Image (cartoon, rainbow, N blue to C red; front, side, top):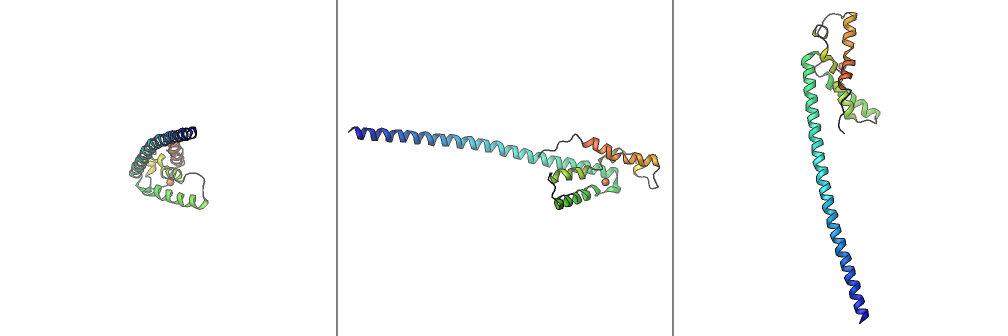
Length: 149
Ligand SMILES: [Fe+2]
């Protein structure tokens, strides 16, 4: 009789333990589902942010090309070449970041005066120095940009 009682007790304990474990699994599954929901939400936000950055970049490049039609498509071609080189030499930094840099490399031309930017004759020494400053101005314009991963 006491053996039977002990068996029942043990069964009851096992049942309670299994029941608790099942509840714990359910609780953890809900927690994982909630975390996945947050991760998916954040992924969507990042994707939307990435699309926004791409659109913003296109707009900036469009403005640059309006300012300097001579370089129409130049930044895009540079970005393609940068990508090819980066893939060939297997750089350890994100190729997309390099492409952003390539696309924006002439952004400093926006502030170069028309009389110099569109001059069809040979530039004077002073004009040459001024147009060469577009690289510094471009760097200063983009140096604080932080592109999300
Ligand atoms: Fe350029």
